[in-house]
Length: 392
Image 1: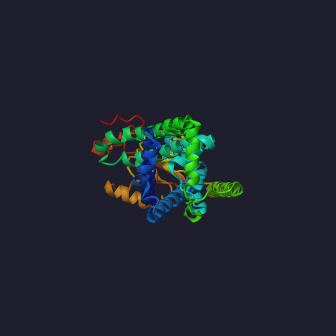
Image 2: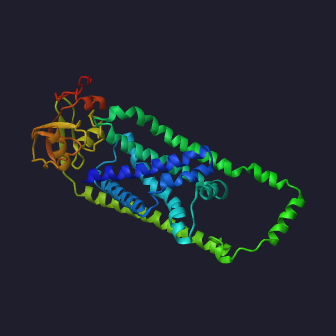
Image 3: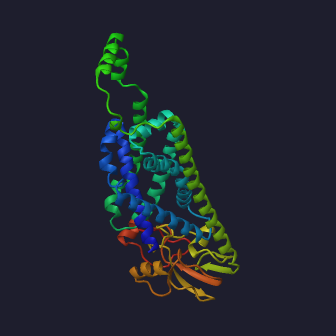
C-alpha cells in the first residue's frame, strides 16, 4: 500500500507540474496566450475537487518521503538517490513563497493571480523571486523525473513509450524556461501602442481629458476589486511573510524530528552481522542496513534496477546459510517474488534486513543487467559470481 500510494501521489503531482509548465511555455508567443489558455491547463486544478486532490497528493507524498527517511538505515546511496533526496528536501522551502503568494493571497485578499500579474512581480517588482522560481522548476522537475522513470523503466510497456517520454522530459522544462524569459521580456518592453500614445500631441491628450470630464462617472459600487491602500498592502505583505516562514520552519522541524527518531532507532541496533557472498567478499558490519545497502556501502556489484524499491526483483538472492532465523518476507517481497515464482530460499536484497549473526548469500542476477533484459525476460536466474558474465 505504501508503494502504491507513493506512485499514485507522485503521478498526480507530476501531471499537475507538467500541465503548468506547458502553460508557461506558451509565453514564447505572448503573455495573453498564457492567460487565455490557463483555464484549459489549470481549470481542473483550481476547482474544489482539483484542489482537494492536489492537497491530498502533496501531503501524502511528503509524509511518505519522511517515512522513507526515517527507515533509511544508511546515507550511502547512489547518485540518483542522493539527487532525489536533496531535491525533495529543497522543494517545500522553495515552493512555499509561491504557494503563499498566489493561492493564499488570492483567498485572503481577493487577488486574481494571473500570469501577467505574477510575471510582473517576478520580473519587475522582485526579480529575486523570479530566480527562486527557476530553481523551484528545476528541482521539482528533476525530482519527479527520477521517480517516474525509476518506476517506468522496469515496466513491460516502457520500450514502446520511452522514445517519446525521454525527449519530453527535456523539451517540457526547456520550453517552460524559454516561455518564462520571453514573457518577462514582453512585460519589461513597452508595447508599440503605448509608445505611440505617449508621443501623441498634447492637444489630443487635452481632448481626451475633456471627453473624460463630460462622461458620467461610474458608480463606486461598480468598480471591481479596488486596489489596497499602501498601509493595507504593507500589512498584507507582512501577513504573507509570516505564513511563508511558518510553513518553512514547520517542515524543517518535521525533517529534524524524523532524523532524531531515525538516530534513536539506529542506536538500539548494536548487533554485529558477518555477511559473505558466495564466491565474493565477506564483511562484518553493524546490523540494521539491508543486504543491498551493505553491498552498496562496500562497493559490491549488485543488480537493482528499481533502486531498492522492491519492484523489479533484480536484487534477489538465495540464502545459502544463516546463523539466526531471518525476518519473514514483507508484503513487497511476497508480491514481487510471488510474481517471479521464486522458492522460499530466495529473498530480495533490498528488503532483507538481517538482525545479526552470520549470513551467506548468493546473487541470482548479473549486476550489469539492463532494463531491456528485464522487460524481455532474457536474463537467467543462474548464480552470479564476483565477475558474472554480461547479460545478453
